[in-house]
Structure formats: structure tokens, C-alpha cells
Length: 574
Image 1 (cartoon, helix red, strand yellow):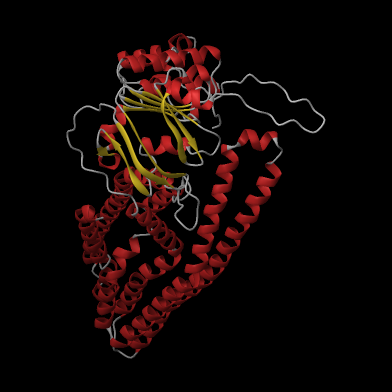
Image 2: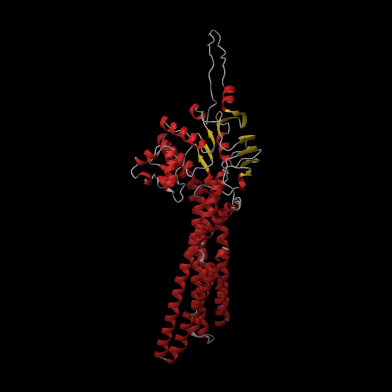
């Protein structure tokens, strides 16, 4: 908001002009009652009316300009903070400490609504309340005392409104966020929900949580509406009481009729911001909760390393005593996934990572691309800690194909080009390297086919092959494939093998998690993980020889022991 200081000063100036022009109406009343009626001057009445019409025209223009600036301030805030919120949300989700996927964006939208609407207006009009009270005191001390007393009562009601609704509103917001998470989970897993008949259960769980949110909101609403009603009574009664007291003072000869009317108008203007604040207090609390959540998200984001010129990536990978816990886990609360592993990969080598389920293979892939951070140890790319690489420099030089390929709404071309400005030659080269050029041409609009949110119009195998082409876009020097053939048929697997061979031929470093022999055959080395530790690492033939050999099966009593000349096996799992 420091960058918006100039806009805030402009809004303050507009507010000053609006509140000063609000004096036009009481001044008009004073002149009409005290001068025009006593002098019966029609000419004076006409001139006064023309003047006040001009004043109101300027006031209306300033009010419109202020509302427009409020709206632009809200839009500017969302545009300015939005990219940082997205980056921080992604960072926190990688570490497993983030809020629900859409919560930060909803909080930002709440702030935009607050800054761009009526919620923030009392903050600029409220400071003018003492100004109007002073003028009321100048009309008559008794009127001033009555107005000041009413103002104090309204301020007390505003404080009571804050105390009475803050906790219930916060509990309602928390319960609402949980309900949103449940609805999002049902939507993301629509096929499972439908196939297993889980919809009634999901709806019941959502309603239980959402009813808590509704209940807290209703409690907050009852308290707030009661205080709003009382504040409305106080303001309306105060204006009438000022008229009554003013009439008494007129009869006593201590005040003019114009002053009596002007006092009522001035009191209404003085109390209006306080009443508006009480009415809009829900927006204030929601904006404050959203602000605090956004502040927590942004403050927790690690500082991005400074972008600096670095030589092109060679593809040397070094892992030194890396200890990795699940996202959000730490010693004492979780078991480490990787337990102090160390190894090196020379540029241009192809390394196959194998091992049983839950061995830590996917976690290894994630620390190699920098998505997860080891709690202890270091991952180095070309000798530099991976955290010291700016993502805008390292990202284009890395190709990553996860187990579950996520594509983005848009065309095949934009997905292969990593959502950047497509280089048609590079897109074609990546598609041909993944051997999906003909498949793409068969789509309704070829490379311009819109694949829908998450690539919904493509099959799982097609999504995986488009993801492969995306990982190969721009000929990156480091490729990390996590079960790249999980959804591929024989043709797709053959294309994958050819793509790995081509990457190897151009000197790229390839790390691939797999358990299929024909893919492993492309590896120079094999790394065997078991229970988060390196069980073996070395030349492919050497490791396969260690993993192969006769298996002796102990016969059950009464059975004949089978003969097994031995078989070659590769530890498998995902």
C-alpha cells in the first residue's frame, strides 16, 4: 500500500472537498430561513438556489470521481498483489503448509471488494465528524452537547459491534473455508464420487461443516443487526431531538430557525460515517481476516534468488546427504522419506531409478527439480545449490514429466510451449521428439485444439505424451521423468524410448523412474532405492547382475520344491 500513497492522498483530497461541500445545504437553510423569509427577496432566493445547485453539482462530480478511484484502487491492488499471491500459494503448497487452493484468491477478491466499494468510505469520512461537531457547537452549546453525546453513543455501539461479532465472524470464515475444501475435493474427484456412490456422503459432510458456518454467520448477523437497529434509532432520534431542542431555543430567542434546521442537517452528516461503519462492519471484519491470511502467505514465501547471468546448463547433478520429510513434516512428527542419500550424475548420463513402493523415488524427483527442499543436505546443479538458481533461468533448461500429468486449459501448442509465446519450430521439434505429431494433427484443430481444463478432452495416454513433448520443449539439458510410461501403450512406450535415446545423443542428463525393462535398457546407471536409502548405485549391467540370480523357494511340508533356474528381476513400484 506504500506504492498507493499518492492515490490515497487523492482520495483524501476528494473526501475533503465532499465534506466541505456538505456545508452548502445547512448554509442554504440558514440563508433561506434567516434572510430570504425575513426580506421576502425572490432575487436572493434565486441566486442562493443557483449557488447551491452548482455546489451540489461539484459535490456529485467529486463523489463520482472518488468512487471511480476506489474501484481502480481495488483493481490495482488485485493486479499488483495477485502474482505474488499465486507464487506464494504455489510455494506453500509445495511445502504442504498452504491454505486451500482458492482461499488466497478469495481473500484477495474480498480485499478488492472492500477497497473498491462502500466498506472503506467511512475511513475517509469518519475523521470529519469532529469538524461538523465543532460547527454545531458554534450554532449553540446545548445543540453541541446533544450532538456530541449522540456521537459518543454511536462510537460505543461501533466498538460493541466489533467485540460482539469479531469471533463469530472469524469462526464462520474458518468453517466456510473448510466447506469450500470439501466441495473442491468432490469436484476434483468427480469420477470416483460418481462411481462409488459417494455423493450423498460428500453432501452430508459438506452440509455438516457448512451449517456450522451458517450458524456462526447467523449469530454474528443477529448481534450486528441488533446494533445496527439501535444505531439507526440513535441517529434518527438525535436529528429529531436537535430539531426539538432547536425549536425550544428559537422560542427562547437564543437561536434562529435557520440554525435549527442547519444543526439537524450537520448532525446527520457527522453521524453518517459511524452508522455506515456499523452497517458495513461485516465487510471490515472479512477484509481484516483476508488481509491477515494473505499477509501470512506472502511473509512465508522464501526470497527468490537474484537473477544473474549463468553459463548454459551442463547437466551435472549432485546430491549430498539429503534428508527429506513429507511436506509440512519435520523430525518428531514424521518419518523421513529420504534418509541422507548422496550420489552424483555426470552430464549426459541416463540414470534409472528403481525400487519398491514408498522407497522415495518420486520424492527424489521432486528435490532434483527444486519442488521440495531437503531438511538437511544439498542438491546441486552444475555445482551450485539448486536454491541459488533463479527459476526463470533454470526452469527452461529442465524437462519434468510427473506421474500424474497436469495440463492447462488452452491449446496443445500453448501446453507444449509451457504457456509462453510459442516458438512454432520448437513446438514441432518437441512434438516430433515425443512422436505425437500425427496424433496432434488428427485432433479437430490440430495444434490449436483447445484441450479443456486439465486436458479433459485427451485420454490419459495422450496427456502423458503431450506432457512428454512439453518436457522436451527447447531441448533442456536436464530431464527428470517420474514413471513416464505409466499410461502408455506399446507404441507410446516405444516413442518414449526413442525420445530418451535422442536426448542422450544430444548430451542431456536424464533421470527416469521406471520398472519396465525396455526403458531401463536406455540407462547408463541404475540407482536402487529402498526405504529412503540408496541400496545400490552403479553401471546398469552391474546392478542388474546383483539384482538377478536364482531364487530358492522353501517348499511347504508335503510339497516338492520347484526348480527355478533363476530369473532376472528389477525392483518395481511407484
